[in-house]
Length: 100
Image (tube, rainbow, N blue to C red; front, side, top):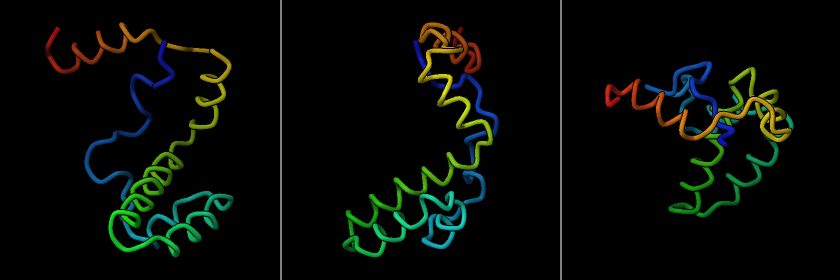
C-alpha cells in the first residue's frame, strides 16, 4: 500500500508554488512552528554541500506546507485510511503517461 496521493491538489510541475529557493522565500512559507529551526540550521550550515542540503530539505518542507490537506492526508496514512495499492498507482501513472 502507498500513502502517496495519486493526484496532488496542486500540480508539482514548474516553479513549486512560486517559492523561491532563498532563505527569505523558504522562511516566509514555513509554518511558524518550523521557522525557528530552519533559521537555526541555515545560519549554522557551512557554505557548500551542507548549506545546499539544508536549503533543499527546507524548501521541500515549505512546498509541502502549501498543501491545505497535508495534515489530514498524513493522519489518514498513519491510521491506514484511504491507502492505495502501489499497483493502482502504477496503473494510473502508466495511463497518464500513455504507456498503458
